[in-house]
Length: 316
Image 1 (spheres, rainbow, N blue to C red):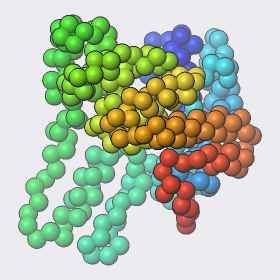
Image 2 (image 1 turned 60 degrees about the vertical axis):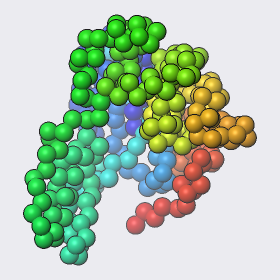
Image 3 (image 1 turned 90 degrees about the vertical axis):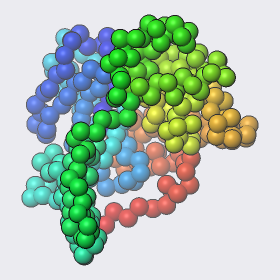
Image 4 (image 1 turned 180 degrees about the horizontal axis):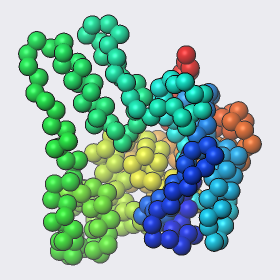
């Protein structure tokens, strides 16, 4: 898991890497924040919602404070998030020593499976999986060109950075707002801003999360597959970990922005806001628990925006 603290809490211009008894710890500059982590512990409970505990947070704080002139406290934390890594089985029982690599297998002819890996190696994983599958295709399959394919929004990015003032003049935005949008969407910025052509109010900042414009929430619903408030505040924008209120203070405002796009009624808006607030409350309470079991019980008590997530996930 990781904690997120404001940039002014640590006086440094570069990232910090610490060797610990268990693994390594990173202090990474991230916009107006630092991301600090991680822990390497087993998790054998709800796979849909791994929960951070007070013990996890205390471990990170105590470790990073050994090299900081001004120690961090719980009050400095704006956000906390946790995730799971799909590790391949290894000889060591310590998760930090298990392989983070992936493996491709063919359990039966024509069926290719892949296990392990991580988000940052997804292209290599795809190459290996497709190369393996290609062996069962009679026709010749051309070699992968993924290493030459740019990410969405990468084409034209640097030219647009140089034109930030001009783009701002055209749309009535300060250049720093344009650069923020370019850093998030690249050359797809034109698609984002197009949503505000008939709704100029979408170019206003979100009141209690002013780093973001309302149009970013609208784009998440219109073009990025967001279906619920949680998708927008936690997964498209990062309001849930960048502000101490975790998105609660702007939940209704954002819901009202996306309601016309997603076809929400007033009842839908109320349900989404209530569900999100309950989620945040459960997460905050779980992060004050001393162990995984109690943290998991609290986090699992929150209602789900997607009913299918409530279905049990087998661990074996």
